[in-house]
Each structure stands twice: as C-alpha cells, then as structure tokens.
Length: 417
Length: 212
Image (cartoon, rainbow over all chains, first blue to last red; front, side, top):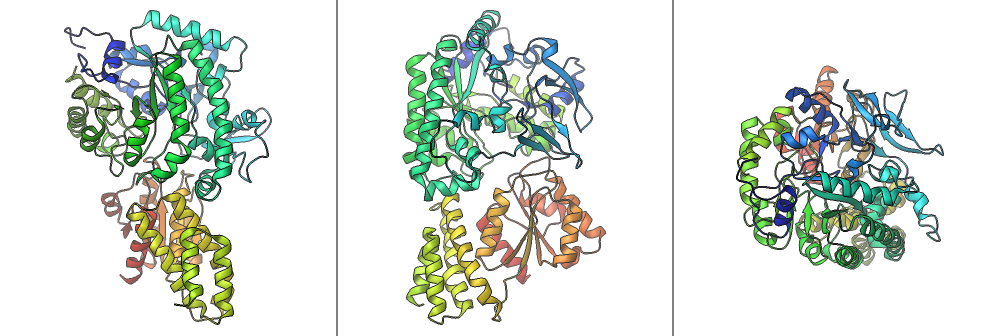
C-alpha cells in the first residue's frame, strides 16, 4: 500500500461499489468461497514466500483455504468473510494429509473416508453418502440428489433434504455452526468484534440460490428439462425455497445487517457458451424471485447485494441489473460474450464487477509471470475507471496455479494502488 | 416428406416425447423406410436444434428436451433399423477423463452425436487411459471423444493419447476433445485430431473426422 492512501479498506470497497473512483484499487482474495484460493495453491504460495502457519480448508467441498491475516496483510486484501471469526480454536481443526502429499487442516467435523479405489467418500451422520472425491481430484462432487426421481407432494421436509446436498451438509463457516442454540447471537458478536478490530469491508455469505438448488435437488440434466417441460413443479419448488431463503435473510439482516457491508448471494446461470436458459425463461421463473431477495436485503439492512454467477451471462446481465444486484462475480472473461471491454462499456455504470481481474483457467495456471502481469494490467485498466470494480481473479485460484504467478499478479495489482 | 415425418420433425424440436412415438409408429405403419424416418424426421430435426443453439435461439434445456424426445423415437425405431442396411454414421466412444466426474457436457455431446446418426458408446466418468485403450480394442470405435471440466484433469487427455500410442492402437482411432478448459491450441499440442467447444460443433467435428 502506498502512503498517500486516505481511504480505509472498507471505504475503498464501498466507494468502488457506489461507482465513486476509490483512492486505489480495492482487492479481494478469499472473502467469498468463489473469490479465494484453493488449499493446494495456498500451501504452495506460503511455501514459496517462506511463511509458516496452517492451511485452513474452510470450504471442504471446493477445498478452498481461509487466508490468514499475514497473507491478507502481505497482499493488501481489502475485504473478508465474517465466517472466519468462527472455528478460531486449535481444536476446531485437525491435520490431514492430502493425496498430493501436503499436510493441511480440515475442520474437526469433516472426516472423509478413503475407499478401495483411492477416492474419498463423505458419509453423513445417517449413513448417507453425500460426496465423493476421486483419486487425483481436488474437490468433492455431489453424490446425493434428493429429488432425483421426482418432486415431492409437499415441501415440509425440504430443509432436511437440502441438508443431504453436500453444499449444505458440508457448509463452510459460519454455517457449520448454524445448528447451535446461540448461533445468531454468536454471529452478531463475532462480526462486531471483527469490525472493531479491522478496517476491512465485511462480507456475509448467504447463498439463497434458486436455479442451483433445483439442479442440486433434481440433478442438473433433469432440472434443465423441467425448465421446459414441467414449469408448474419448478415454480412450486422455487416458492418453497423462497420461504426458506426469506427466513434466512430475516435472521441474517437482524444479526449482521448493520455490521456487514455486503451480502453475497449465489446462483450460477451461465455455461461457457451462454446462459443455461433463455432470457425469457429467466425472466419468467427466476427474475421476479431474485428481485424479491435483493429488495428484502436493501429494505432491511445497509448491505450491498452481491451475486456470484459463473459463466457466460452477458445475455442475462440487463435482467440481473434490474433484479437489484449491486455487484456481479466472478466475471468469467474466458467465456463467450464476456469480453471485459464490452462488459464495462455496456454495463459498467450499472453494476460493479467483482472479478475478471485474472483468468484462472489458462494464464494464471500456465502463463509466464510476465504474461500474468500484462494480462492483469490490461484487465484492471479496462474494468477500474470510474469505480465499479473490485479486483479479484475469475473464481478461485486453482490448485495448479504456480505461486510465482500469484505473486506476479499482485505485483501488477500494486501498480494501481 | 410425408406428413408423419414433418410431424415427427416438429415433435422433436418441441421435445414432445409422446408425439415423437406416435409419429414414428405412424410412419412405420405407413411403410416409410426406417432409414428415411431416421434421416428425414430425426437427424434433420436434431441438426436444426444444433443450428438454433449455435445461433443463440435455443438453449441447453431445449436441446436436452429435443434430444430426449429423439432418443425415445430412436428406441422405437432401432429394431426396425436392424433389419435394414442403414449404417450408423460411425461409432464414437465418449468419456470424461480420469479424476473428473462431470458428465453433463459429455452426455450432451453423446446425445447430439446420436441425434446425428452416430452409434455412441458412453464410457462414463473418471475414465482411465487404460479404459479408453480397452474400448478401442474391444468396441472398435471410429472416434474417441474425451471431455474434461477441470484444468487439473485436462492433462489426462494427453496421458490417454500416450496410452493409445503405447498400446499400438492410436492409428486405429481418431481422437476429439472438449470441455471448459480445453482449447484448440491444447488439442494441437497433445496431438488430438479434433476439438469442439460445444455439443453442436462436436457433431460437425465428428462428421469431418469420419471423412478425413
């Protein structure tokens, strides 16, 4: 950070979201489970930097690390997730040797079982196999699809079946504590303590996914077919999900609506080649509901609304802006129609791009450090003028990204702050 | 084209499974050649679905719905095709590479290839290089189509081509690859014969490979 900086990290992030040009480029790594760094890449980065300390795998499904304070300071990160205030005792973690040979720390509640095929199973308390990681892979895939065979007659058991989906059953912090009696009180107290001890902007990750829950419960192929063939059942499911989501949002807004700065929603709407669905399908089934979720947050808190939505979503961006999202992530610039120049020109005044700073599929993984710098500079210069940009890679930094390239990326970032 | 085939074509575009079944049966009852039902009613419809997808006028849900309707019709037609001289366009073994469990894209490619008249052998997910080699030996496909979603599993495509070479069967089969992180440049680098970035283009690539 340069000495001339006047804004705090929080002010810098909020200025960018409000489209006021900040004093320097605001930067995220690790404030959400889709803007962070894989445990393997994190381990390698710390080794490269000669730093000790644990590699806390806080998102076990994606095997993503929770960056420690020393790393946040080293790279001048401006924003963090309030979930990091949980699992703060040594006994909340234990050592686990990854198949790749590195020793990292898993949450004490997470115990995958090695199988005869060298893959890893995750079985829940009732004996349901909820996730599997094949040998050589670096994250866990879903194995239980509760509504695979059809929609239920009623949704009284919806929360139970949602818990069988690995994203919920193996939720990252703070949600791994959500069942505890004083959870909401704890969340508030811990978030306030974090706000008092840090000037970084604070994110609360609340998900409230709709399209994705359809794909988790019915499986992707079935739910996509349902979008065309069985819209009545799709709408029944979405209404039941909305009931759950409103209950969550009410509690989140009550607990941290005046403490956190940003509420992070998720709903992946894009494939590499285009949206999963026609804009008219989105407008009919999802847009009205997404609008209700953002409206609730804006009405009941001071938090900005952030949507994580992967892939090529160019054709949906006008609708997403109308639905009330302040921020869009991860800005997957490698997908079709996602040229950052076009995105900034057409939508830059209406939404904040949180991502798109560096491609985690080709350039960071396999480019030279110089190519990484050049690529990073070009994206920053495209996306940052006039605010409306928080620097972040396109999604999480993947396991195969060499530490030299991460350092090179941040060296380029430093030129803009 | 008879009215039944026109209806069949339209039912596939609409994803109307019942309509597809009725019109395949009606065409058979009318004495239309099974090969003609396949090419004029079904393959032509799936070709149109691919065109609409590429132009951005139809999306994955509509493509899946059409493909499922086409499959229902194909199941009804298959016994009749066996009694004729109608040859498949070619045989393709599709699989997601080792370490990777993602099969939506791969299955969509398989469906679109079937819709184009190819015989498709689905090897599933997490397919080892040896399993691809065994498929070449046992199933004698014309083409192997490999899919990977992850940057970390993509190198298994390279390893599979090496395994085909080591087993002495590389020249017996064409290799095409696709999936989110895969690029044309990568395909060239590892010596694959073809690359496609979506299911519709995969059909065009497979057709080209059959004639090259």
